[in-house]
Image (tube, rainbow, N blue to C red; front, side):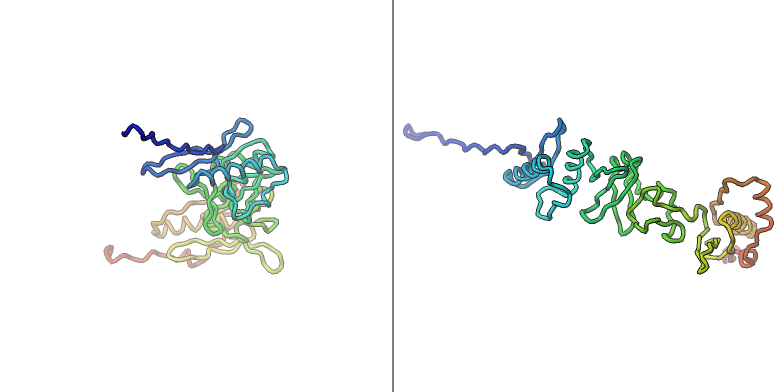
Amino acid sequence: MKPYEQPEKHSERPHYEGVARAVRKDGSVYYRASMTFRRKHISLGSFACAETAHEAYLEGLGLINSPGQSLNSYTSDSLLAFEKWVSILNFRDNNIYFGNPIYVGQRLFYYYLSPSHVLKFDLDDLFYYASHKIMCRGNHYFVADYGLQVSISSRYGIKPYAKLGKDFRFINNDPTDFRRENLQILNIYHGVACERKKSGQYIYTARIHIRGNYIIGRYQSEQEAAIAYNKAIDILKKNGVAKKYTANYIDGISPSRYAQIYTDIAISQKIIDYRPPISPHNR
């Protein structure tokens, strides 16, 4: 260095409140925004530059400090994800923070999949969905549980093969309202479908799948249809059908009454006569 040269001064990075600089494994730099509210540290997201991260921090403060801000105030140009808006506003209004997009109301809570796609649940389900993120594929809602995809319908006694309108229904016709008072299970048995006739009367059809669907019969009660399904299983097994079926457990009926219905119940002649096709290897 020559005597007259001055050492170069390193410019200091400006300090942005609520922003922390971070480095990825590949060496690239990004900035994390966060804030603390009611002694809770809340991560607000990661951003490419410090200025944007600081703006996100200010947006988060605005949600906390502006009572007029609501979920309806959210716009697509918000720096914070909509899920984060839901979590922050619920914390502000209800004094409990959830990582999932949950907002607690009176006697129920809302789970926001998007600003316009909202599910409703009983408060009894709150802490389950606080720890299980809901995902959506078409009209199918599911959570990840121990590495498996579990349909949320199964929590309410709705079987995987159940059809809306035949096996269950939403009483208020809102398919996003999973409060138990709004769910009516029309059929709880394997192979039984409830159908409403033009007269308003319900009829119960028992079906079984062998190499295609076979109608076992139509009955006046779901218990009769469920017992007919069990009887069809026994007949098919006796006839040499190797497929394994799950029999229905009939609750609230005495063994003698079950035996009487089982003996008297009519079964389709196609079931009685069915024989499995003979494999060429067994000839």
